Image 1: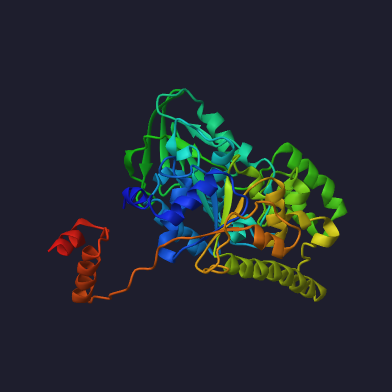
Image 2: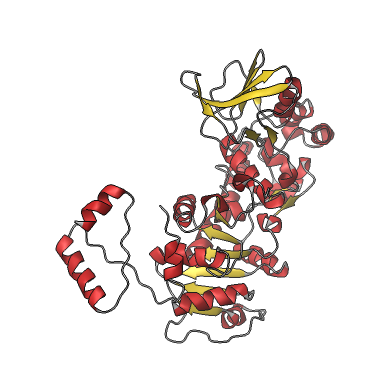
Length: 450
């Protein structure tokens, strides 16, 4: 549903206009107080291009993955859909001997690639206006250089060797099978290459005529029949965040003797065999780890949606990760599998960051740290004209914050009380309100008109 016109209707709202001006000026600490339903247009007003918005790229952080999905869906009503992206979190803990799902990894790597190397010619892989992520994805460091990983890509009419594409897919952690059924798999039959990228809803079939790509179509997993033509061609990001390069395999071989508890895992990695849970060894196998905010384009602001809930969620995640490690060592004492010990094997680089550490790192890198909440510190006495300088204490940070209270409220839930809704609409129109009623389809709109 397209609601971009509402941004123009809201442009005259004093609070939203002030928030937009503060954002455009680069305010370090900004707090926006607005109801739940007004958050998507308020955020869109900060990210949209001038004069409708402030034109600031945003990293919007939510407490949970479900909130991330809902907010991203709502933002696509106010901004171009391609400009809003989601950065999902792993389903596993950083030191757990389980690998995240290939579709999760593919979506993450696709986002990191767009942040590092946006394509101005393709909106789908172009610059990101708003990146929405749950706090779990933001406090977990990622392997350095993930944005530099090149997806396997080819378009109709291009010249490409089938064997070369097969080698590239294998190097990107795709699994070769007889028949593609799951994400992260590929199959070869004569001059036909079937690939299921983790970012797509359907696999793609690449047909060759010699070394020329003759056609690329989607196909159905259920009956393997070809569907419509894929106009954008094949774009397949890697399926793992640790690729078995020559350097990674050599490091695994060197560590096999130093870490006997992980010898089996490291021995397979040194032989080029992907192992379940190998991502937990990322700090030892990769060149380094870094927070996601280090990969954001210049000028991006971080916005926490309901910071109190995010703060509580962060504490729970950090505590859960530590409890898991302690329980794993207790199991190992009884003869179970040896856990990964951040303290003993220098794996702490992959551990969750605290919210205070993340905020300190962001401010040190000159990344604005804003928040959107439903409760102001003091709605009767909002901070006016406060300095942007941040103090050393929490009180100083509160004093330096710029609080903007939007003159908006939640809509009333009528729950089928049509007459009551019509009465309120009549009264609002009589009082000079501009009323916009939206529906998700033409049928409900026609009934509303009646």
